Length: 221
Image (cartoon, rainbow, N blue to C red):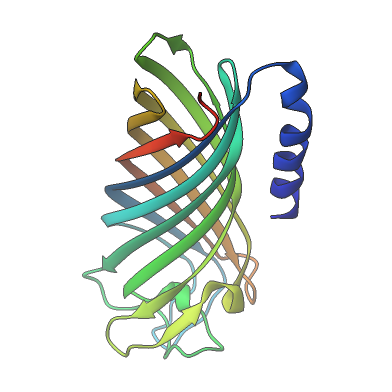
């Protein structure tokens, strides 16, 4: 988070010296599929589970808020993402009883809320009077929590996991009318994390979907 704020402050400081600057504030919402890959080694449970991988998929929705500054075709800024997904695996749970001191990530039937913060960079590769095509990348980290649908237990990811990182890529189709920009954006986000108590356990979640939204340029005359 500190590095993201430093990058944004640096851009706010230096870009105005090069010419006209835009300041965009925006909101978006979207939906897609969340693909989850669990990789576990050397973990013994009441079911005798030792080594395994598991792949599941479920629907997912998200909302985004963002603030960017732009000069010409380049935009840099901050993005906040809230993602919700619900996993209901058909197989028997392969972990022992779960509580706040154990691995919430082994829930087979759970709700997951991911809260990500990103440094966002975009470049308009096509720039027309009322249309722009702008691919973007997002780099950051995330927190959140999981809720066991069976027991109702809720555990924050910060209590059981670390090394949480996230990257994203999006392709923005932008329709511009005065101060307002309306967006349609297919996108992909990767969420990776590691268990605190078992260095051989990792989880990777892949969001593939699209969102719709708008931005307003506060500095446009």
